[in-house]
Amino acid sequence: MKPASVKEIKVAIEELPQKELVELCLRLVKFKKESKELATYLLFDADDENSYIANVKADLDELFAGVNLNTPYFAKKTYRKILRVAGRFIKYSKVSTTASEILLYVAEQMFAQRKELRRSSALENIYQNLLKKIKKEVETLHEDLQFDYQKRLEIIGSLK
Image (cartoon, rainbow, N blue to C red; front, side, top):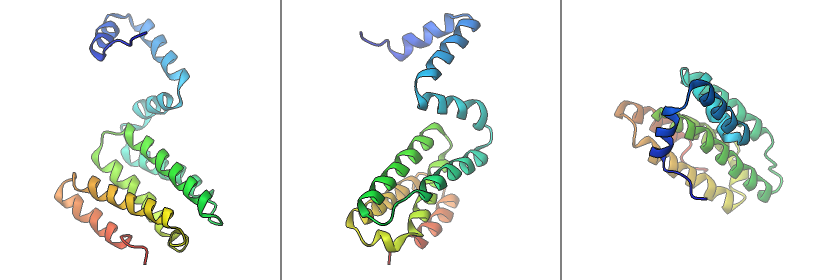
């Protein structure tokens, strides 16, 4: 079965009565966790971006608490999971500073565990790639915001 284009779906949605539209949305939300998270963001968190960022940081804190630093293999798996979750939350927001704020928070949390990161080249590579991603994200922001974020980035810039 070939899916319809976005334009065709938009036209079909515009023709639906409100009751059927609500049922359709609920049915979409029911099947995927990401759809449910996006609907939650759009309905409850989109108006207050700062509280959304705070909630994301709290969720990430729970994941950071579960990092097994005894073995680099498990630490690598957990850090990748944290980055995947952070990326998913970033994807929902269209505010430009949200991505920088969340990624910087992840980098700061990883920097706090820098002794463990130096033990493994894989962990160090994950950290360095995260810093590159943050730099790229910060470059898209306004100059004043760039200055603030670059100061924070300089602090966590190296593992030494």
